[in-house]
Structure formats: C-alpha cells, structure tokens
Image (tube, rainbow, N blue to C red; front, side, top):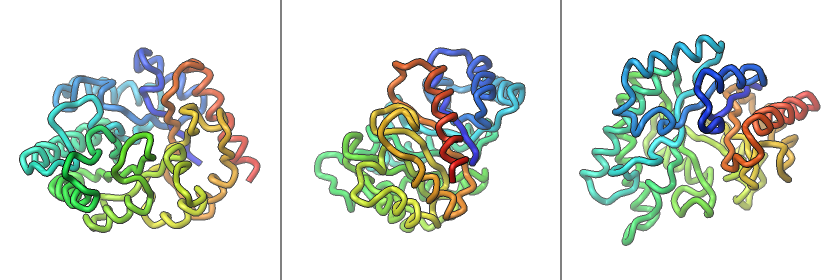
Length: 272
C-alpha cells in the first residue's frame, strides 16, 4: 500500500515544512489542491512550479497530481448548458493538466461539486452529456501529457450530480478514453446503499485513485468506519495506486491527523 496526503491538510504550513513532516510520518506522495498554490492554475508561474518540484525532491516525495480542480474559481462549470462556459472549462482542464505534469503528477481528481451541481432546468441525463462534452474537449491534451482524469462521485451532502461509483463509471464509458477513469472516496462511498468493499470490487477496472477518510470529516481510523474490509477489497483487486488521506475537519491539528491516519492504515494492512 502506498500512502499519500493532500497538501491542504497542512493549511498555512510552508510547503517545505509540510513535505518534510509528511515524509517523517511515512507518506510517500503529496496530492495538491491548486488553490494552495495560486488564485487559479493560470496564475501559478513556471518559477513557482519549479520551486515546488524542488521542494518535493528535497523531501524525497512523489507527486500524485491535483484534486479540488475547480474549487475557488469563477467562470468554470462542468455541467453548464452554455457551450461557451463548457469550452472555457475544458480549456481550464487543459491548463490544469499542464500544471499537473509540471508538478510531476499524472492524476487529476475531478470532484468540485459546486462547479458541477445541477443547474435550473438541467436534469441528470443532460448534465452527463454536458460533462462528457467538457471532458472530451480536454482529453487530447490529457492524453498528450500522460495525465489521467479521475471522476469523483460524491454523496448527497456535497451535491446532486454523480453521486455513485456506477454513475462515475457510466460517465467514463461515455467518454471512452484510458485517460478518464474513476476516483473512490470512503466518505462518499459511505452514503451508498452498496457496501464499500462491493463498490471497490465492482469498480476494479476503472479505479485510478483512492481517498481514505471518514464520514465525520476526519482521517481513517478517527471515526466509525472499519477500514479492514476496505483495504482487504483493495488488496483483492490488486489495487496498486495511492491511498491518499483527505480530511475536511482540521480541528485536531495537522500533526495528529497526519500521524494517526497513517499509523492506523499501516496497522490495518499489517493485519490482513
């Protein structure tokens, strides 16, 4: 099992300090939220990208790539009926792909519910078509750069579009590209009627990336979810990607979240 952590977990820590601590905890990769590096991807200079690459190298960490792709941006929308907005969003996904590549990553997790929820007059079927249109337009750039877009289903607390792993697979099939796959998140899967291990098994041909967290918004092992059957299912399908810690409640503090999450995951894996 390869462990990673999302960089926004460290909040206002300088990157060099955050990366060094992540390495000390036992993580081997970092997943980046673009808004931690600049107002948007276009504003993150080549010098800044090179600096972050060097900081990763200094800490002996790898880069997974990006998530929260459209968060805290304006003018972009995945499921808009407006063709101009979709074109602008596709162009932005291309720039995010270049950023991902410049950070030595190869995966972009597409969640960002506030930029994909159903707009007035748009049903889910049409939203799927609009989303597929956006991603198809960006797919050639992703393919050229060797970047894979991982579609992230999210639960009803986050939004009303792409709520299940099956719907994520359906969208991936509509686009029909090896550079468009699926991301699974424990917190989100906890809202489905299907048991999480079954979701993992049923999604095995599409899984690109995996987030470990708990419905209580904290890290793995910091809530009620038992990760033993989850990691057993990942082992069963020979998942060889990263398991990345993503939390939404930072109150316990960075050190506690980062340390306890990986210690718990390692205990679970060692028990299998």
